[in-house]
Amino acid sequence: MIYHYTKGYTLKSIFTDGFIATEGKRGLSRSPKFTDLVWLTSQKVFPKTALPSISTIPSSSLALHYSVKNVAVDYDAIAESCEGLFRFGFTTDDRRIKRWWHSDERSQMLNNPFWRHMESLANKVGDEVRQFWISTGDLELRNFVLERLESGRWVTVINSLDGDSLEQSNEVIEALCANAERWADQFGLSQSDFRLAA
View: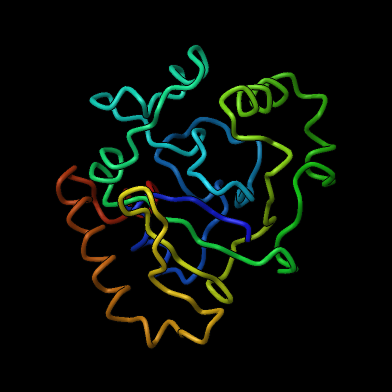
């Protein structure tokens, strides 16, 4: 399986849209994006480069992982702060995704020193760039598994590979979206800012 890792507060936007959007469509930051892809990995743990940085949880800091080896990540505390940690799983034979390492998109980035530094950083914190996969367009929600991290284990929430449809999973989706709405209200985000943040 190949996974797109995300935070619980992003689920409403993902399920409302019906797809995982490329990074160029998301983010409150207006800083330039070097790629416009959906990022995935074959790693079985939540990538450190995808963790939200939460000031009250030191192990969520990418800078800490870059400077100190083998720092244990407090996934439970991080999950509690962002409405849960989730991953969308897709099969390796899904034609919408491809390996990053030998892709044309990566070849075009190799001369960019900033990008080389980003890959070096990802490797140094244990995220293994060779395990990265990409989708060059929005990744429609079909043929996927949604899992939630609970007490150190990934628990299946929706499995469309086994016949669960989004219609059959509406109750689960509505509950996840309600949690995301509470998060947006808690931080005073408008609906448009909330959708960008996702």
